Length: 250
Image 1 (cartoon, rainbow, N blue to C red):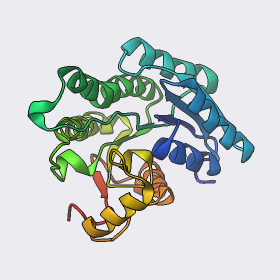
Image 2: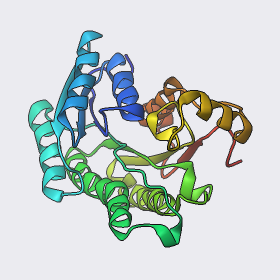
Image 3: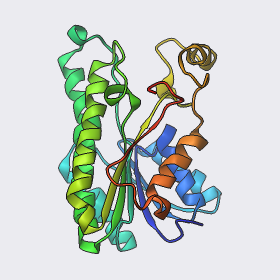
């Protein structure tokens, strides 16, 4: 029960990596809140946590809006008295070559991945500064900072910006007791790893040829990585970008 009694926020907690991480924290005794735009998948995550004996709640919020991000943090502090750990995982995916990117899709991709993390951190840090302690882990990607992939220019630019923003904030706030790091996943067993028209068997065959490790990552593996970065075991890791991608960016 490494996180017993810790108050944990996971954005984008209604599916994929976010849901897996929320379940992982709950198994370790945390008081978990999941947040995102759609209520139904968030409620499903809460039900899974409660069915396993954990403590969870959900907040519906559009994190590209400062008012929603502020309300999210304020509600957690009101419920639990503070915020110990924030995992900023919410994001969006867009695929198109640079000259073909629709301008609205560009804006949506930057807002969903960068502005959402910025506004979440802005209000999370404010709450953590009042307490004099806190941990933030932002979910970026191997794409952008570590690998360039044709057709993923907007997504790569957004995730590279998340990494730069996170590492700068890490330097700004570590002396105030707030430790900030980044995790950059490669392909994991989530719907986002599927290309248009692909099923999981197609994806697995493609990834077997592309990745040095020869397979996609499991949700248990990425969950363990995020929980380590958020734990006291990683207490000397500050402004780190931990790449978990099966060797593709090595």
